[in-house]
Image 1 (cartoon, rainbow, N blue to C red):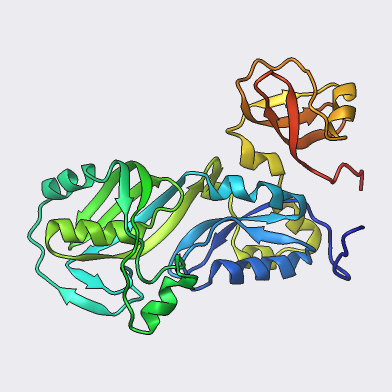
Image 2 (image 1 turned 180 degrees about the horizontal axis):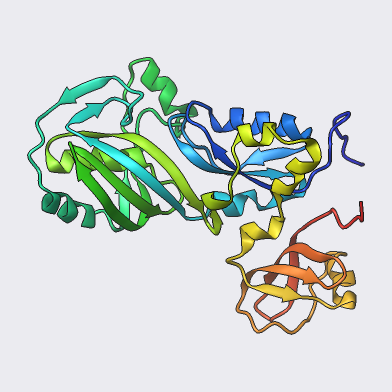
Length: 305
């Protein structure tokens, strides 16, 4: 049965790199851009808190099939931690619950930051979308209820100290999916004995995608519909870290019927990008243990519109 399509919508396929403004939720930003393009199908690739700005990849049409790869991708952030002031949400939107003098030095901070590198167990903030017994933690927090939270294992690849002035700590952080930067601020403040909260956050990268190539909603609104299309990026840009395999026309024929195929590639078992000279990017496949290439998530938009 054919999927029903929204009336008067545009079947776009690709990725828009949005520079989200402060105050919008990720879903609000998504819906505004979706309406602007008149797109039939769209989804974002991991929430940014309303206080945060920066890179929010939006997937349209067939690009929603790669959303999970971006959700699972490493992230890079610019962040500001305000030392000496602790809030209940761990960020600037929360109520102040503690204020203490700050006596730590830059050397103290650098020493403590090193302890956050690598695999760490991070307790999610109460004001978060993490669910416990089927209910989001932030809903419990709004009711004045605090519960024990299970730590989550995350990985911090790097923390660069960019500035330290007036109790304001400026950092660039490279981390795995699932990392709460505001929890890092809180935990650092606890270790230094003065408390801290995250006062600003800007996402710079998601996997191989960079804020340098992003567009704001205001910029999109200023363009005519045809000019906006220039901001729709190819789906496979989100998968640049995966090896690629080029198929022959015959192999493509069988693969599109769901069959694993034999083709020269030289890659180890795992996910790959699939290409065919005539149709270009076909989707994602998997190298099997026997070396054959199996289809996994094939783009269904091989039409020539």
